[in-house]
Image 1 (spheres, helix red, strand yellow):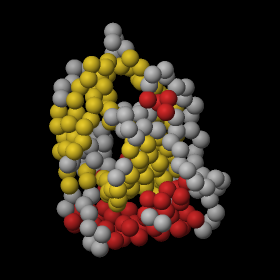
Image 2 (cartoon, rainbow, N blue to C red):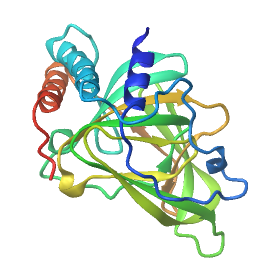
Image 3 (tube, one colour):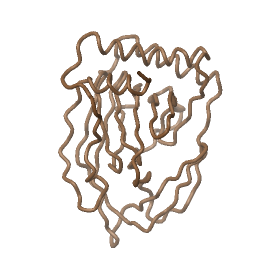
Length: 256
């Protein structure tokens, strides 16, 4: 059984927070609904299964920290560190590390960006608490608050291109997930990740590419095209990030 399948099955057994109701919008990508994961076990996890998943992810992070698994953490533009554990065709596994380790504490936290992905994801909280704000985006050419920007990523560079779509958005509801809980997002579903007070948190994210949708972020109405180069961490910083995350996974959860 490959790594992706092992993690997919393990995260699928986690108890999930109830998702807010969100009506579909005619013609919008959200009509795709929630992603399906064939073979996903149903019901709540047994007492031995969380330790198995935590042990698997913790072991991967320990290998990264020691240098046995050669990869570098990436400082993501949305304000967290990404550890790309697996890339295999249209599938991928990443560990996302949020909180003080993920940003300069002297810099104020950026407001969350409303965005959607071109891939469906399943995210399991490893420690801490993660808020997932789901939003409804609708066309508003006369009195818009935002413009939709397409994000085209390649070789560590994001090309952010304005489109002609002018929009407004409104919150649908916030799903809060604690350690051991799983949430899913469909491709094309707009959301923002929220962290209370910038407290430490980490998730393991499984993604599957979906033909058709593109990555989109909402930006200023008068915004222009820009390029963002994702900063690659050096070996020492990567080891520190992975090592701290592994220690938090193996210890008691400090989230209130």
